Length: 172
Image (cartoon, rainbow, N blue to C red; front, side, top):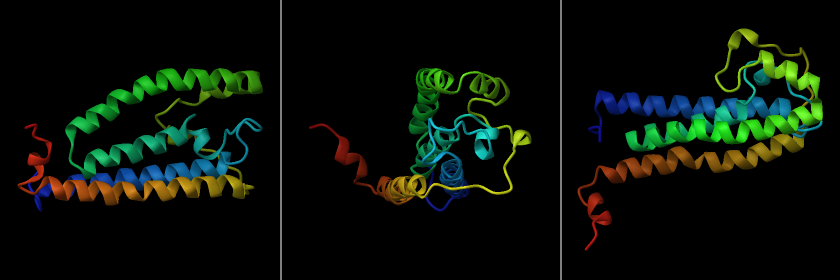
């Protein structure tokens, strides 16, 4: 555990907020392009032009922010270990479905855009974008769940600094 009010604690706090903000922004940005259109239109612009799974990237960053907020190396390792397993199971399944729906268009897209790590040089976006309000409403409901991440994580981090905290977990 990092000492409260130390430089290290400040760095972890900033890293937590950066991951949280980046994750939330990535999810919102991706929702603008895919919300309400999934499986009806192949999204290849905006965040989908720089990585094939921007919603997963946003969720990963939101989850990683918890590790920084609660200053847990164990949690960070768990997130980093779960990510490739999740990507190896979920992405091929979803991409097989997309290839079945969009055929050769998806094959071309898949061959030119990275799976997870964004390549900003590929960014392309139309000058005007039609946005689905239903998609945004769904993401807003998700957002109401994310907002608790920093609040709860900060609470846990604060509790971990108390002398009595470890006693809660000792077996009789």
